[in-house]
Image 1: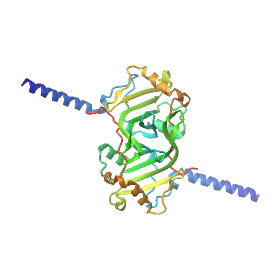
Image 2: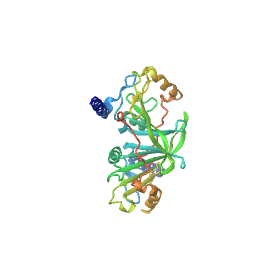
Image 3: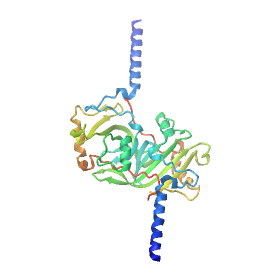
Length: 175
Length: 175
């Protein structure tokens, strides 16, 4: 009987956990610098894509409305305050039915750059954040994690710290 | 005086052309099967990305609202009527400041699949269309062009003719 109760309690506890997790973004912890997870990022529009062959990963670079407007108008050095860039990263894998096409497989992480020249003056005008794995665990133990971000981004300091060049997406004949 | 009038007329004619071209998608010709260019495609949301290493090109796969909803709910075999998939294709190039990242350079074309099982029954339930280059010239001389599309897509006939598997984009902890 004790065993049965113990099993039942375990089941209840697991159900409780599942319900809590099913709540979704409510349960995503903030980044160490206080940035909250932008739960609507997958509804943002595409700015570019990339394939890190050194890292064997595929990327979609998305932008919020402010970032997309800036990208389309060439206002990217500097990007305007309020612009947010997202980079969604997946492990690479050959497409099942066209092996010469490399496509996303497992989700790795999604990382963000929030532009606010004053608020984030200590990190080049950008607030960095990354959430890792399907569980979206915030990256970094404390605010020092952003130094690692800046270290990698230093080669593009003169491009307002951004590697991505917005990809051309024509909507009418060139003129 | 005649020369001045001639020059003036030329200027006016060129201005007229510029204004017409600036109108953008109004001047994009329809595909041979009558499909009109979906001028808002760059505002659609991302479904996946790919890198055709055989074709040295990068791709973003976008979807209209119906397609994105279907992708997120796993209703992709078959995709629902009204779903439209876009594939934006660029030539590949190493990213200037991180050469192990392959990124888009020149725009090649944007191609679409319009799902309507009845309307496009002759081409597997999908209406195909492609516009090429910055000038967005419609691809194909007549409706037979779609046979070429179907030929390449035959390996995925059992996946409702679609190569792309929607990429995972979590919005909350996995459960």
